Figure 1 (cartoon, chains in turn yellow, purple):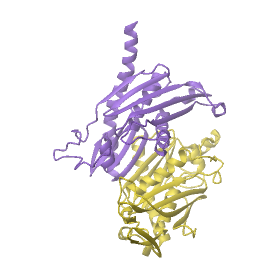
Figure 2: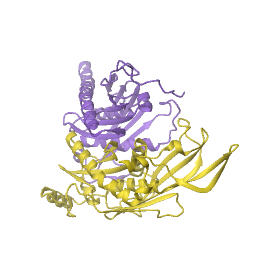
Figure 3: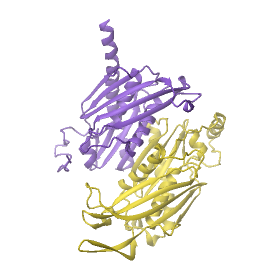
Figure 4: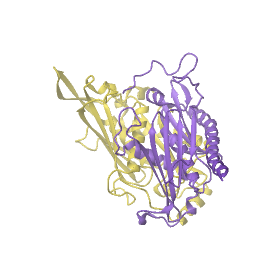
Length: 280
Length: 244
């Protein structure tokens, strides 16, 4: 829906760079410092799972809806996971109204890839009638306020919404499916956190604000698992990274993911955490 | 027309399903200047992938209000032809094609001196004629040659290759089967002379160390691809010179 085609005045970029040269960011943060985050789950009663995430003044909500559908032909014994994101003008003057554009689609696809690679949701547990009827899991992500780093916020919102999701139990009687009142938690078996690093000139900074993003040459996002493995990478922007910069950004991301995992666990409450996550 | 999963993707001798070793690339063929109408063009075969790219520009920006006062607008469209894959692909742009158009544009853009062409458009159109894993990297190889063939001023070419994962082994340049049934895909594009990464994506799970290894593995192949890109561009102009 959007093309980020608004430019930062070059004098602003100069101010940002002058500050970075002194080792400071305009909001007073260190290069490797994340903004304050706030996590809420269960914000939408009608949704099977939902969450709201603030990173500084960036705000994103995500909701999970479930419906019974057909599996993909190549994965007949797995539920279907669909991630959608919409960058609406409600969230920023940079976003234009209209059909999904490159940024919306990229955002949704990067979040989807990380969740799949990490096997966040055990899709094999979402089968109702093997080969024919499965749960379709819709994860819809809506940024409400854009002050940079939408992708990390979207990832956190999606993860929290999944951890909040309850799936109705079903019974099958000669091919007829009955959806029961009773619900059980969605089988979330592995957690994934997305961490973005922006490159402005020679400087690598964690969790960029909007003006830092607009000043940036390029960004790189890492999906990180609880074990500190990388399960998704996406470079974006019309700039480049030296190989050593990619590795430095990787380390920044892995490091930052630890505090974000902690925050997620605190919000969800350890009792609700998936088995593997509890052991870690 | 559906593929069945192979029994194994690597045999006991470390050979892959098409006989290659883990660090072996598929045969690469590049030809520059294959289209008459486009300002620049290129044809690339990487294994079974067949890709054609056309570059236009600098030319007038349409619609005009999209023109930028300080640099060229750079556009890129990646299109998979309906018959390029096993199951016919609908000709409407898929979400995958929209994303790939963006990442290919962002892979090529760092190499172009866009500031030298204010108020103009530079455009690259890429058609996948046949797909077999690694079409975005083949597209970047073709797109860079097409841009150079169009005479657009550039910092460097851009070359690209994917590193995949089979079990815990990193393998270079995965084919369609390895992409479908393997354990990861990490396409990497670089400006070969400058040594800078312009595209990096990944799915699958990697240890931090494997990210470094994958970049090293790609870097070697990218130098070979670059040499072939340069050869293709030179041979077009040598052929013109000889015919004079």
